[in-house]
Amino acid sequence: MLAFTFPGQGSQRPGMGAPWKDHPSFDLVADASDITGRDVAALLLEADQESLTRTDNAQLATFVMSLVVLDAAERLGVEPGRCAGHSLGEYSALVAAGAIDLESGLHLVAERGAAMRHAAEESPGTMAAVLGLDEDGVEAACLRAEGEAWVANYNAPGQVVIAGSTEAVAEAGRLAKEMGAKKVLPIPVGGAFHTPLMAPARDRLRKALGDVSFHAPEPVVIANVDALAHPVAADWPGLLSAQLCSPVRWRQTVERLLQDGTQTFVELGPGGVLSSLARRLLPTADTIALSVSTPEDLQRLVEVLAGESALVQAAADQRAGERFHVDERLVLSPAAGLFAPAEGLEQLIPGKPRHEGEVRMEVGGLVGTVGTTDIRSPFAGSVEGILVLPGERVSSGQPVAWLRANEEGAS
Image: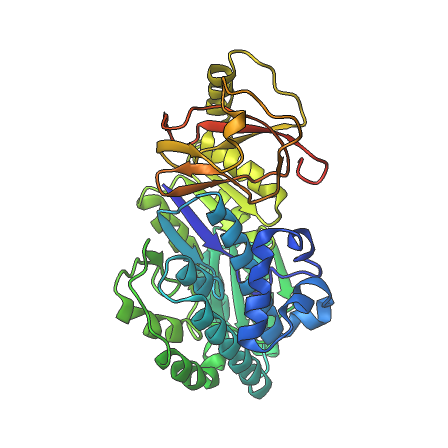
């Protein structure tokens, strides 16, 4: 089973939208700007680190960037069996699972970011990552600090984030080092998130949540608050409200996904923090975690889902030994069913007379359909051939076309 995971605040970085600017999925950014009244493109393309550290900017930019990447993955026909998101990423996961629509997600994220920013101004605080100490030890350090210090994120074995007032977090960090922590690293964020210091933001967020229609997520989403699946729509407003002042149980979430049968973890959005954390918990070499943050990463996603051996064997079967060079790419079927080529590509079917002239394909271009599922190319270039006949049954991951990638489409 495959799980989509989505990063939270802190994964944003200047210029993170630039690789996607010419991708069809970047059209979503204009929609986000219209809905929120913010220049989201400027946040993704032009904003500096200081601007992106501001809580409301960071959350909106990260959320939209994650949805751009999600849209690109969906264009390839990739569908998850589970979804989860870290803090802010939980909103991305709910959009991915159809629990809330894009417009509602944007309004909630904008309101959440503004509410948390104001709460941080009322009750200033900070966060720090404690490395190399177990969870019980970190919890004990916070208690011994005798101030406003709490565990905010259970990220992975040996990585726990604490948050609270500046003085209490510093004292808890000092105590954690005495107890054996290898490092305590300050995190450059705008407040003590996922602690009681965020309580002033809850009333404002509750009001916004009350204006949104929730639907049963499909697939299910694993919640931050309790690391459990919640298939009932009515649960989610309360879970999102509680999440503001409760620790993110990410280690427990990954473990839950593994227990549910997840073998492939795909992080969609900026950075690669969640895939890195997941690798610490993966039990076998057959369990994979990868990050998709640029269009070039889409090729790696397709190759991983298909399996390298499946690619080689299918290419050999379909092309009867024809050799593929380094600038050539296979387009794989995202599903099983009967194949139909896209209009204009019929001449490239085996045995058909070919017309003169190059047949061009852009990233996201339609190669054909399998049943009701579109087959979209993750590459740009010249279509050299269709590998299967119209009406032929294909399996998921089977090559259906091959392209000679241009410089922009190759990776």
